[in-house]
Image (cartoon, rainbow, N blue to C red; front, side, top):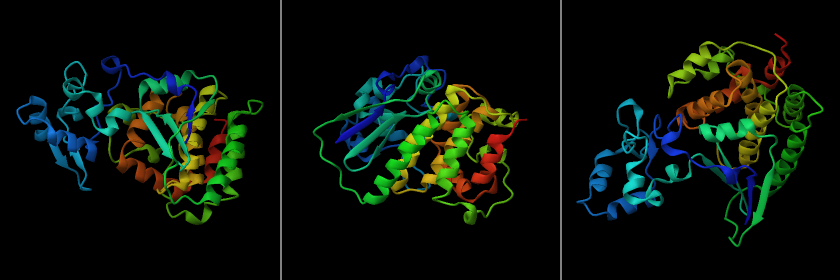
Length: 322
């Protein structure tokens, strides 16, 4: 198995109770099957077993979850912002989501790509301060995973992603020119003009999510203003994040196609331009959107159907000199 990671991946470390925002607040956490099997084996007299049993619930999709405490806090998050489950039975027995956050993994048979998400403030700060996205590769003894990926499409998108990365990291051009080139390149392959059915949603309406996790995000959107895109390294890094995380993953089952991934790169830069050009703003957006199934489903649908998120309109916004 070939393993690919951004070079900064190895440097990430959770700062736990010192974090300025908690990943244990705002989200419902799924209890995966392996974790549930372990919890059922615990001695019923243990306080942590009683606590686990008392907060297990089902969501509207039939998933087993831990019901949230007041202020949308995880029921195991204590007054020091540390995890009581982690303390009682060890990190290895916390839910899969908790053990892996903010890491993400895309499996492509014989290749596994891994990264970290903007939704964690520490990860967002790392990507904000990064001079350039580079990657580490290694090969281990793990066998390839069975899959139904279209091999021709995978190879095609992999080559195209390399072209996109080369364009995005060409600092001889302004970042907006790089993004426009990438949008035009991909729109020639996957035109989006025929998919538009929503002409009412405005650009800033896109960020008014039905599931609000942090009111600070709502205030930032209210104060957003159209501005000219700055030619910053951070804007380049934002675009790289979305291309790395989503472009090749479009071969996997899901609602994100390759053009959606390219649009996300452009929108990410516009978020930093209009709403806030710091790591905290991208952290808030990611927590609100990438880690809310409601909000992400809505966003992916808007990327495909909304006139304000067509390639033509995104290019217009990137060119704005206001």
